[in-house]
Length: 255
Ligand SMILES: Nc1ncnc2c1ncn2[C@@H]1O[C@H](COP(=O)(O)OP(=O)(O)O)[C@@H](O)[C@H]1O
Ligand SMILES: [Mg+2]
Image (cartoon, rainbow, N blue to C red; front, top):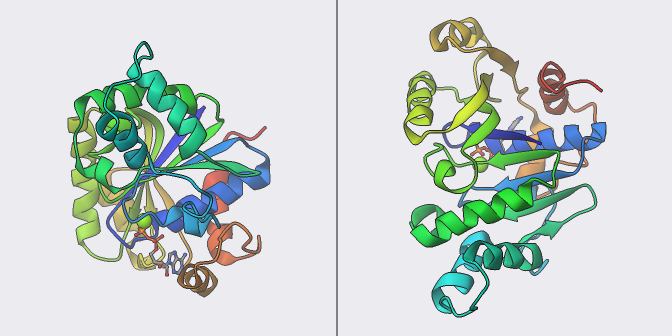
């Protein structure tokens, strides 16, 4: 099992990157893949063609409310982590042909419920162990991750935006990761679709981190996102997809 997570400022292209990374793994047959939408904006589902609500699925925040808050701790004899795990399997997990998807929801990111957090952590580690790859689409920082989803990840991708603030972000990110106690094997910097070519050398030099390359600015991707269409069926020759596949080719172990 490998866990990959994105970070970076808003609008740099993190969510579309995760969707196209899912496409890459599916194309390679590296499944099952679990997608975790940990951004309260919840746009990963749409980018992989899933209508989470119409599919009758609930976010983890909603299930936590159902399990621990509205209905209290009345299910005697069943430990909290078991209770939430059962609910996630039954009501929270969208099961697709090539990938499954969980959505974190809003309240959960903002709130802190200590019992649920501990129970959830156990439950999620049971659930996630079924997968070969777990791709987490996170909002800007990673502060929310550790207590909840993942305290140990294989790769963190920091997707850089066009402004000089992106450089400051990368430096701060490193510190935040250490402060919240997330361990990782690799931290890579990626130029987002709007990251200027002329800053590539600077990205590698200033951040002191391995710079993997840049996501190509691609009107097809922008158009699909705008239209609310899936990025999974995007043609394999699409420049943005090719650029992401080329980066991942250097990372994902070849069979
Ligand atoms: N490769 C790309 N080429 C052109 N536009 C893109 C690309 N990736 C994303 N975008 C545009 O940028 C916007 C933000 O992308 P998104 O992946 O949601 O970023 P983030 O998750 O970092 O906020 C999307 O609405 C889309 O229009
Ligand atoms: Mg996003």
